[in-house]
Structure formats: structure tokens, C-alpha cells
Length: 373
Image (cartoon, rainbow, N blue to C red; front, top):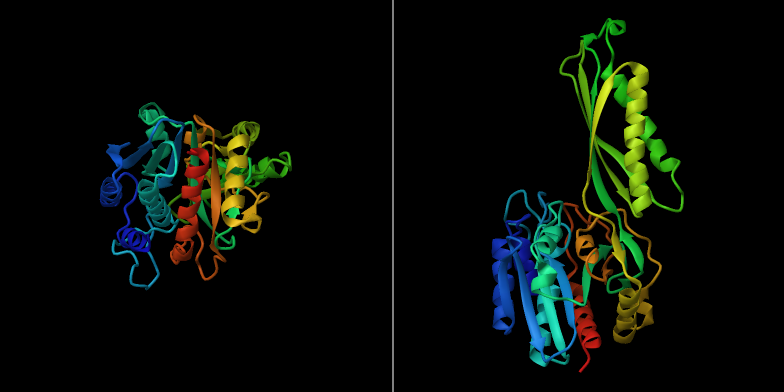
């Protein structure tokens, strides 16, 4: 697993370009005797391991890297300029491959395990594409499980809780149209820059005056306006993101963004257009499957390795699309302290090879408990 992981890390491929990674995965699965499908959702791979009649289980890992320049100097650092495995998908893939090969050898289960290697988790919705292309029709699953390494959580510990564990992900664009003028004569125009500043500050009330028990984030991340020191521009554009854990909070954010923008622009005599795009839904674990995963960790690693009250993350995850169609559970496996830049999406991140065995052992135990002989 360590060898696979480091080979993938050194040769990162981003969304829907994971051809070499997918080829490595397919070769390992085929060599282990699994029925293997490649090119699913463009660059995804699904391996099917069947041992008699029984229930069917889906286990999912993600394949893609990020558009990021790596700043590590170890031997297995990225060899592809501008691309890096900064989220640990290399480790997720290696762990699930290890579990597949082990289960193919031992076959201490009865039923079917579908090993799902998904492309394009980072922003491009490969999970949604897999579902849209008939993942669960072609590879039936009674339940689906996912796993992500988690810097900041002690290495080898599992955080598993029911309900929302990752946030919904939305983006918005606001174009404010005022009236341009000389910067020394602002009274002759309608200043969209000042209006944009008012909107940015007012958007902070969307969260501060939301239900405090339902977390949300609204962040303006880009402002575009003007081209000269002495010109008040005609237009200003704001771009940003919103995160939420509950559907009603998501609705509240969108409605509030539209209301605030319209109200401030109307009061200033400007006009505006708002484009609000809903992307990944919240990742919500089902009660029964969560309890099952918790019991597997207790039985395999001991109670001291399980956390059942770890706070949700406001990051997003497209495994959520699979959980919209099948009951399941998404767990976090501790990657270690996360110090020295070893945090997700950081140019100095590296997956902790010491947790490869824990992740693979979890997958094996999950399959053997869910599909008992």
C-alpha cells in the first residue's frame, strides 16, 4: 500500500484526467481476480468481488489530485508541475486497494463488495456523474461507505457520527451596475465600489443573525472593479461561497443574499444581478449505518479509537451525492497533528503512511461484518 500510495502521489492527476491512476487501480483489482470496469464516469473504476449470494456493499475512494504546486522535498514529491495530492486521495486509493486484495484472498464474507474508485471529487462532482450514469443500477449496493483522512485528529482514531458531517457547497456571483464618473467628482455618478463594500459587510449578518445552532459560512472571496486611479467604474463584481449543514439554512442563505443585494442597490440607485449556484449537497450519515460503522471500529480497534461527537466540517464532499441515493456513512480517520503545513489543501501536506493499515483494516472489517458468512 505504501508503494502504491507514493507512486500515485508522485504522479498526481486532476479531475477526469486520472488515467494512469485508474490504470494502476484496474491492474491491481484485475490481478486480485475482481471483475473490473474502467472508464466509468469517464475515468472511474469499479471492482466487483462476489462470494456467494447475499447483500451487496459499496466502498468508495477518490482518485483525483489538486491544481497546486507542491512544496515538499521528499523523494515521492509530485513530478507534475502545478499538480499535487494535497488532500490524501492517494492514501484513500491505496487503502481501498489493500482491502480489495485482502478480501479477494481470504473471502471471509458472503455477498458482493463493490469497490468504487471515483474521479473528480475536487469541485467537479465526479460522484454525481457516477450516480447519473447508473452506478447503483449497474452495481447494486444495499449501503455505501466512504472515508477521508483528517489532519488534526490523532492518527488511527475514527470520528463517526450520524447526521450532517460535511457542509453543502454553493457559489455566488453579484454584478453591481452603477454610473461611472471622474473619481474627483463622485457626485456625478453612482459608485458601485462603495455599494459593493456595503454589500460585503451586510452579508456578514446572514450568518450572525442565523440560527446559532445551525452553522453556516458566507465568504466573499473575489472583488473585481475598475482599471484606473481616477475613474469610478460602471460595474463591480463580487464572487463568493456559502456553506451550510441543513436544507433550511441553505434556503435562508440564498434568499438573504438576494434580498441584501437588491435592498442596498435599490437604496443607492444602482441595479444588480445575482447568480447563485447550488453545488454539492450536505454529507449526511444515516443512523443505522453510522451505528454499524461505530460498532465495527469498537470491535476491531477498541473503544478508545472511536470518537462519536467530533464536530462537522464546513468543507464539502461529493460523496454526498451517493448518500442522497443510498443509506451510508462517511467517516474521518485521523492523519496526525496536522502541524508544519500538513493540513488539507496545503502545499506541504503529505498523507501519513502509518495509517494505511488502519484504513485497510477498517474496510476489511466493515465488509466482513456487513456480509457475514
